[in-house]
Length: 378
Ligand SMILES: CC(C)(COP(=O)(O)OP(=O)(O)OC[C@H]1O[C@@H](n2cnc3c(N)ncnc32)[C@H](O)[C@@H]1OP(=O)(O)O)[C@@H](O)C(=O)NCCC(=O)NCCS
Image 1 (cartoon, rainbow, N blue to C red):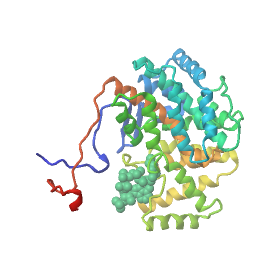
Image 2 (cartoon, rainbow, N blue to C red):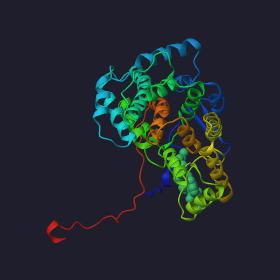
Image 3 (tube, helix red, strand yellow):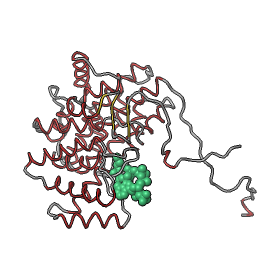
Image 4 (tube, rainbow, N blue to C red):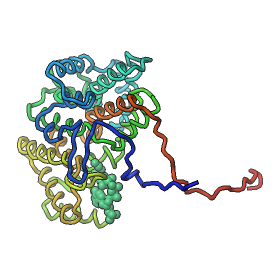
């Protein structure tokens, strides 16, 4: 038998074909169904992007209107799920999100229906409910009472409204909408791969999204944006350039990974970082406090000269979310609010042309055969 050799981290392995996301790491290109991320970030809303990912084309005005109506209808959480949230002990918001996404399956009006139409309805419902869920998790953690979503507001504005209780400004809404657009899909990233592996067993959409949330939680994936903010805070808002430089050089000298830098696929700047850098700059200017942006820029310059490693999507997300007044614990759950669109698009694609995902492992254990020694003789 030929011995199989593993590719560590499946690096360079093409594990499936997909019509959803085009990624060219050498040229720094990211496109959803052929649409360049720069065009989408400049002109599209998250709702349009959801439609694009699920249907592989941009919606007409009336199709978008129908989706917005469906979103508005499904946005509120089932009351028992809100009660369950309030009964959870204090802890990491991602744990609450993972538990409650799973709980939402118990209130699925399509339970027992495995048809493609029911799976699509679940994708729509879960995407919109997760926005309310994450905002409510944040609101309750901050001591607030859960809010009813506002049927007049879109997805980004509703998130900020349910989180804070205040109608957000146009800049805050647009900044958050752009962040949702930028994070919605990224080909076979770890959480999407996990969701697709789950889908390939023909489990239900809720279960695949739970797999996605669980995988996104890790600090090498969705957890990196919170790690960036922790690093910025550890360096300190009042740090001068020398202190910032020394902090980064010391991390590098200790062989620590600087969060928000590096990527398995991009060999150029992550195209999403371009927009988040601008967003972080604009929000800082509007808030009259650009310190986090300036410190971030300094870190980026040090990383460039010391390592040539570029910022990724998480780096400027941190100062963007912080300036929007979002608590650190909610940074990674916000990734879920957006990425659920991509997960569900991939899951529906997997269902439509399924084959169980079951790769092989390179065996590195004790030589075969080993002699079996009876329990009393070991
Ligand atoms: C994203 C990440 C996991 C990609 O990892 P990867 O493809 O396995 O790349 P590697 O970890 O093998 O890195 C290759 C080299 O770059 C270095 N490197 C990569 N990211 C680095 C970072 N953020 N800070 C410092 N050095 C880094 C590695 O130390 C390694 O150097 P070496 O060859 O001298 O050992 C990695 O860059 C990382 O941990 N980044 C920080 C966490 C983060 O921001 N994650 C979000 C990704 S969107």
